[in-house]
Image 1 (tube, rainbow, N blue to C red):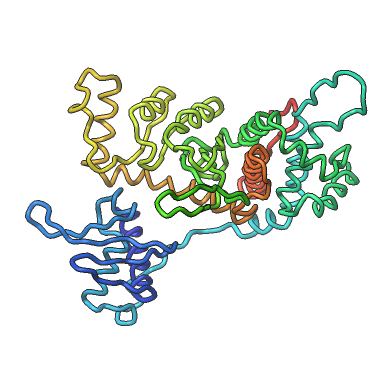
Image 2 (spheres, rainbow, N blue to C red):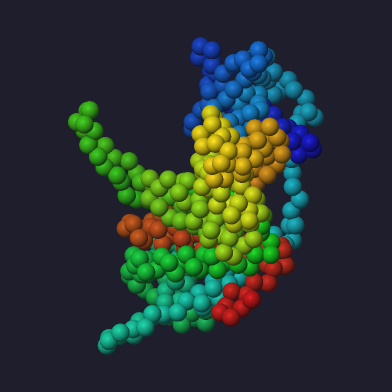
Length: 417
């Protein structure tokens, strides 16, 4: 109950901030509450359940918990004119977490140095394809990938990243310093994509003894291309900026990415769940696997169970225990019914596990803050490869932090443990 009480305190504190900083408007019988994190808004309304008045909200937190969210609390504050200045500050206690600052500071100070060394060891696994026929010898593929990752880590364009690439060559970290045109050409090569997928999974292996619970979600990275179409109703051309969609599974303790799939902006979430979990299960022992309701399906729930994990996926409104649709003898009916009853009748226990899903949001936030929320490449293949390189660089940075904060000693070179 302690954790539940603390979470409710945090919601109350955020509700006070919304009531003080945002403009909450009543329209008819509903309240429009602006979002605290983005430009949208949510609708708070009052209804009756079992003869008792109750508040409802359209935000994901209320849909999952079925309990008053910060938007409902903010409406109550406004209705009763309990503005933040009138409430004693002692009633709200901000939740804080301990931080090993010496280890964190050391990881930050030496990150670039350790990143270069760990990335070199990881790229040493890459074998160059055999060159057929005559011609100028190609550069080692490991040096190409090393330079591409260095460019993404530096957040510089290909031309300006040449200084770091040549510095790595001078330090003996790579045999060659590929030119920016060479990098652009290889980034557009579809043959590079499976190699990057393999390196991403290999970079997560040092966390095998640490991670057992995983979260799945997707996010978008904007690019410089546009989708155009003709609006038949108004007879005008319209356009919208496209983006690359990254589907990923990550460990909830360290936010290490264990598997990823890159699609265009129309890529659906649910079909990517099973491949992500199956790729993760090849290297990790599955415990809890959490995901939002977009991934809810009998096939996804059964896949987690088959791989030895425990699924925690909230049910959509109107979804039952499955017996009305397929009957008791339907495949995985008992598993589906057990998950439904846990979600519907023991919500507190369900939420204690489901709360770990916020870690995948933290993972995406870390990646975008450090390596940018947009893709600079123009062609589709290059965009997918650049997104994979962002995830790869993130994993190496996580390993650097684990070296100093967890005492991890990763060996990523060929033949290492």
